[in-house]
Image (cartoon, rainbow, N blue to C red; front, side, top):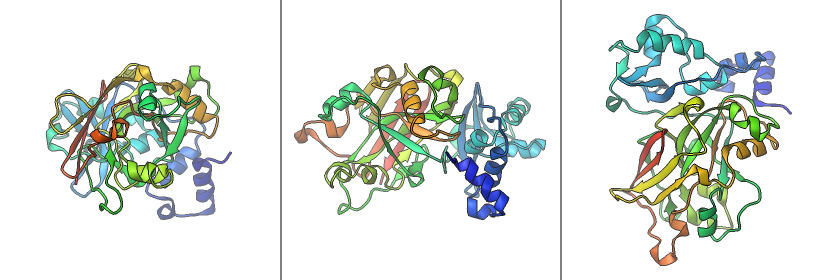
Length: 338
């Protein structure tokens, strides 16, 4: 089966320019020519920083702040990956580790996290795979039967948004029933095709907090338009961090959602309650199509969503609301609605 790497390799051989293939095309082409998968990051918490020129570059979260990888690499004359996607698809972990070791204590390159503007962790993944009804209590509150195998759907790259983004809601004539869905995001680090559950997690580069923001009227009241209800602009904030897989047990993480200044979470559960844990999701999906480095998987949301409440208690999200998504060991993702 042809993959996007095969396509890039063929396109380069045919002389198609980088502009036609996108910003990462030359780097992807180099990776396509390499049989071995890039080394996956270990022991790292990464993020994306939005620079003054609008570019979104790689940062490393340290105890003393955030290391600006691009600035440090340039000053130290070390060719480092400029983004998380480049790191995963092309490689560059040894260079990144060299920069971290050399610059981690240099004030010129380490910034106060409160002073940075977060960029998108992902801008152009090959696939954004989503799992529906993956917690028993959520399936029950939705009035659905427990699935016998993972229910998959997708989002598109237009939905991707950073930590502390503001989602601009569509006009009322388009949609009014907005709902929260905090989810664990799996980030692939190696190509997985027909992998076993036992081996599945070895293909994972890391994890992040994601939010499958949803327009329920579009999703459920317009003929079952799941895709439409999930893919409006900015409807997939992810962040603030990517945490490498060696630092996280994805099968035992507390997950919570808060709205505005409410003290009690709207959603509170643990990934131990998945119907299909990450191993099963990866193994199942890899039997349908290849999962490649940089692909991301939203693993489903727990109970407590607005659509699962009695109709007389359904108060939909609106302009001015602030949503907080928190997952143990992965950080807190915050965004506003406007």
